[in-house]
Figure 1 (cartoon, rainbow, N blue to C red):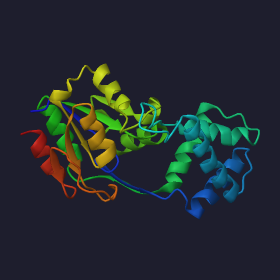
Figure 2 (figure 1 turned 135 degrees about the horizontal axis):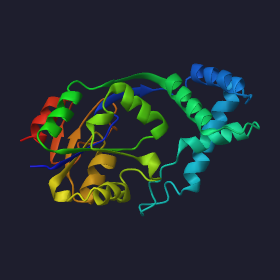
Figure 3 (figure 1 turned 45 degrees about the horizontal axis):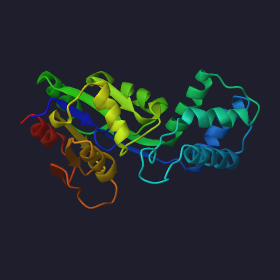
Length: 243
């Protein structure tokens, strides 16, 4: 039925919980920044980080309506670079990546694949289907996490919003994948756990849709997807995609 299966990542294939405002996070990260030559108190570093994120989003026009730039995506590398620069440290790319990954490790409570994910991805490709990832995510975090979880090679292509400056539900992000891979929307399906970002966004470009309600789905009514699951059940998704 489908030649191309497009997946969201977090909340769809990967269960994750982070706490980005935990005091211990900023205490540990401030100590690291001091070691890198950038002296911050934990409170100062936290305030500076979230202020810079907000400034970057505003500079890109976040939240200005429903036009084609209504859902921009910043690159957190820029935020970390500015944090160092504010303290007179000229950070190279390796230091920026180290700081970003340290932030992620300190904020991460847990991360794991949902049961059946590797088996489903393998079964889809064995059946001759193309498997794609289209995720609102930061490469500096996600590339490492996907490698650690062992699923990077399970996809024919990986599209992360931070690489393109735009995120779901923006039709432009979906269009990048469809156009680059020459995918006919009538032969493709989007699988996700967010009614607006995944389902509404996919339907707007003509994709079929599968919705899975997971523990980190938004608090929202069941969306108008072609196939809906009220709870996480990867084997049921696999059965639907292979029917």
